[in-house]
Amino acid sequence: MNLFLYLSVVVIWGTTWIAIYAQQAAGSSAVTVAVFWRFLLASLVMLLMLRLFRRLRPLTLRDHLFCLLQGCCVFGFNFVCFYYAAAWISSGLESVIFSMAVLYNAINNWIFFRQRPSVRLLPAALLGIGGIVALFWHDLRDTQASAGLMWGIGLSALGTLGFSLGNMISNRHQRLKRDVLTTNSFGMLYGALVMAVLSLLQGESLQPTWDLQWLGAVSYLAIFGSVIGFAAYFTLLGRIGSSQAAYSTLLFPLVALALSTRYEGYEWHSSAILGLAMILLGNLVMFARWPAMWRRAMV
Image: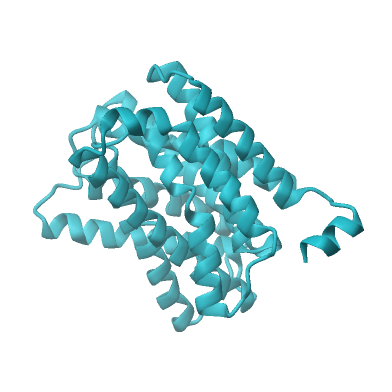
């Protein structure tokens, strides 16, 4: 089950980056409006399904307040950052920066829950992130750290921090035995409502873009990227911990690169091949069943 959840997260979220780009390219609506429709649709589908299958669990007022905070962190402002960053950097590079969630989560777990990172985490993360840098080294060198690139990197890093803080709130829910699908549903709904209020305060219309590409992209982002993807991720988080679950983000660039090769003309170089090998080795370090003698040596 853990492997199934892990692969589901990697494949689904690895493809959402190109869908974000497609949605933004097809419509003229504000970023906050685009995020609003994504999570409004996702939350309504989730709440309807939970109600039909009698899986919607009661929450306390305090739980709802934490769901509101979770919605702002992981179903709202973080995606505003990612959507804006898409104007400056490619979808593949966004997924690379998002992979830093593995480090954010390890640090935030230590801060909020006094949970020491696994001894495997540091070498695995170093290999994974080093591999990601190698994957995109050629592009980073060619851009010469332009102002647009730096804006894109900064916004993506800020969005990743928001995602990690949302992970900590999900940890809180699951430690208190709150149902992950219920808390996700309300978190998405509250995140969408916050985006609606922000859009109206900015004078934006909540009217969707009646374009086939825009509608297709927002439907994919809502159903697959949000309903299925977040349910799989937060379930995995509860089963193996946030640091190990977030390590799945180190594989997103592989999916994003495959799509970028097909649709954005990404060119593979020797550094990219080296990066791929380092990421796979990082997964081996993190999840392989090492002999007892090796495990003792690592500890």
